[in-house]
Amino acid sequence: GLVAAIPLLLFHAKLAATTGQIVASLEMASLKAVNVISDFNKRHFEAEAESVDEHRQVSIK
Image 1 (cartoon, rainbow, N blue to C red):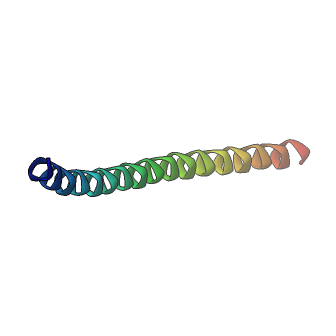
Image 2: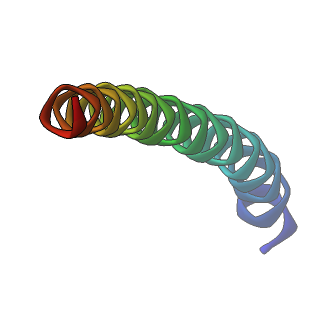
């Protein structure tokens, strides 16, 4: 039993470590994607707000 158990235990440890690295990599990639989308939306919203402010100033004059 130990002849099979010990190599499988080592294989499991290696597989678990590799899986952890892959999950961490995917989490980092998804966080970067969310940040890019968030920054784009923030810039778009700020530019739109400036456009509305400029339009209001022109309308007041």
